[in-house]
Length: 108
Image (cartoon, rainbow, N blue to C red):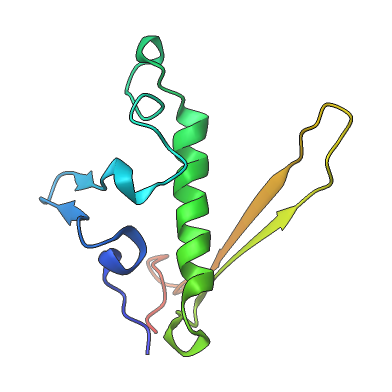
């Protein structure tokens, strides 16, 4: 059965105080504290933060036993071939069933 608690996807150190969410950088192995910095002068890179967040969600989702995954949300990733610049692309797809009234995530 799916456990909807945010700690399932973001770890037990996830917290919320009613106005802000807090997820420790340690929850994202591919992200350094410099890359997560709020300023580019300190090495901050919003692209790396976004990639780390999407990668974490995808990894956790696919690591859950099928019976423990949400039935009204799917997460997938595709990986392209390495190009001449020794780079490749990856794409993440998130799908949610929404309630028609209020446009909210549908209950499991």
